[in-house]
Length: 117
Image (cartoon, rainbow, N blue to C red; front, side, top):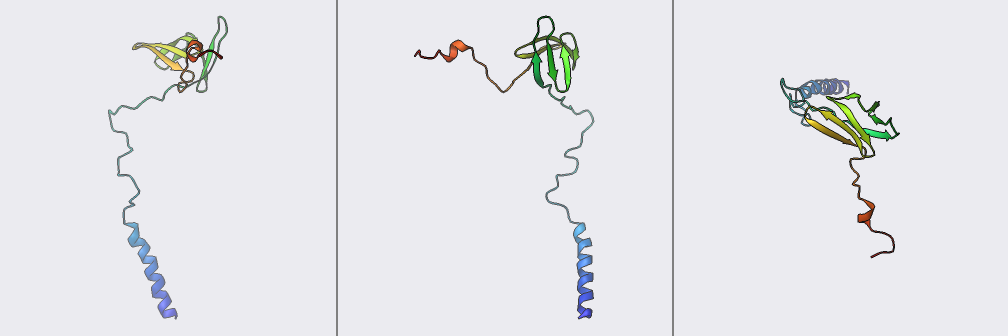
């Protein structure tokens, strides 16, 4: 029995080395996720987490940073902070970073008043 067991174990051990040379079919092709020289790298989007509106001193929390009007932000300066979000003036013009970008707001007049049809 030992005569058959030893060759079987040796064959199993060697088969692992043979399988090591096979390519992983679930692995993406080489170079797919590598940055190429001169390739555009997108900047992370600024996310407005909250705004604090006070007469003369409004603040906004963008990521982990608190900003106010006049502060540098990205490639521009904070121009205005209101209930809709933060307005940043850049050399390309005014950029608006919304407080709740996925929420569509409608004026109360468009929604209709209770009891009227």
